[in-house]
Image 1 (spheres, rainbow, N blue to C red):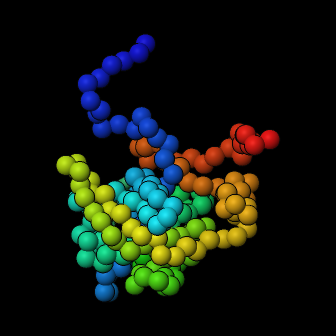
Image 2 (image 1 turned 180 degrees about the vertical axis):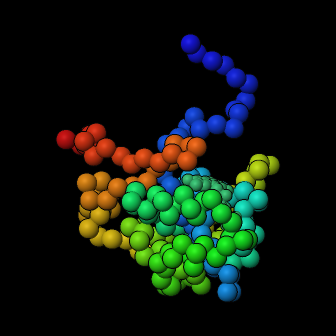
Length: 186
Ligand SMILES: Cc1cc2nc3c(=O)[nH]c(=O)nc-3n(C[C@H](O)[C@H](O)[C@H](O)COP(=O)(O)O)c2cc1C
């Protein structure tokens, strides 16, 4: 049976989505927010966009900080990701409470996650809500940190060496099956 609906209800039709964890620091306040609504927008200059609801503590913190990091954690870290997404930085210092290992960023006044296999340091250059219920923040990527053993010479991820984290909705996560890999250049 094929169903037709006017518009799009709140749904997860277009998932799975890769999960990222955004780190924000303003003065003494540091926070982490897991996101699935994020995307690279340009190679040159390198631009990265993240979509955050004004309901989140991270929203105004990012407006104030004007800098953020984008961190990709391996599948083994799903329990931490789920915890980071279950509480607000308004109520909890997530870094202390969940004993998150962080290190200072190099080009922004912020931090990255030690367990991330790749992290971007971003400076906020624009934000807009497009009349929607999330604000889209665009960052200029000023630095990248990555674990060389998890990427080939073209920076393509080696999914046998590291498991990326995907989300399908309703608290459910999965990773990719390396056996499904098809290299269309061969
Ligand atoms: C896997 C996952 C993906 C999420 N994606 C988004 C997202 O793209 N945008 C958003 O605003 N919130 C998203 N959330 C919800 C926030 O992470 C969650 O509300 C968090 O607790 C907000 O923290 P804060 O109040 O400290 O900012 C997601 C949560 C999870 C677990």
